[in-house]
Amino acid sequence: MVTAQPFETLSEEYDDWFETHDGAYRAEQAALERVLPETFDSRHDRALEIGVGTGRFAAPLGLSLGLDPARNALERTRERGVDPVRGVAESLPFAAGTLDLTLFVTVLCFVDDLETTLSEARRVLADDGTLVVAVLDRSSAVGQVYQEHKDESPFYADAEFLTGDAACRELERAGFVIEDRAQTVFEDPATIDPEATPLREGHGDGLFAVIRASPVP
Image (cartoon, rainbow, N blue to C red; front, side):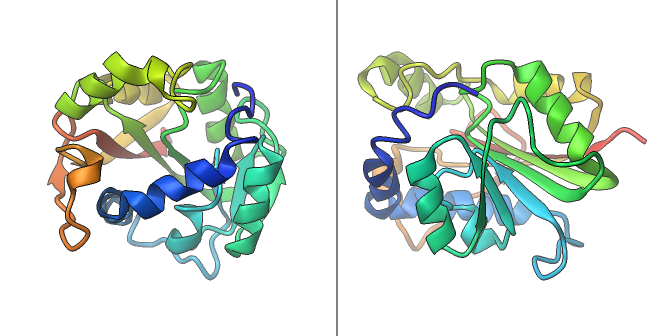
């Protein structure tokens, strides 16, 4: 995974984004909840968010574990009730087949080695486990704006944004079967009404594209 900077030094600024863009944040949570498997039980399942950041998604979704290379961000994760694990996506500190769910939220655009990252996610999953991936879809209208202005952001300057189609292809290449897709954030995230959570199936129109996949039997 890329260096923990700037998520190490700017963790407070990162966390504040979710407060100032509450409408987008709620819509993204709704999309993730929509795609999570119906059998997911946060009380019992061993579930890991890889690249958990400050725990903004893992905590409300009920995931038990959060992995990240940024120590400061993990402190906030702990405060939100998620067990923090320091590490990188390309070398997960978990035994094979021990997790029921692995989750990536806008993390694949930051990893150094996408193939190894997805291979590791597959390795630690049980045979009947689930992988959920959310990407900032470069093919969407808002995604194109993000791509054009990414050098202006301390967080996205080094990001390699994927399209929803490319993310699906990479998952299939890594030994997963696509089961479900959803998308949201169809306009500037700063303008989304917190009381509205626009959600559609598929991907390509919304900035926030979510994909559920399972290991090939």
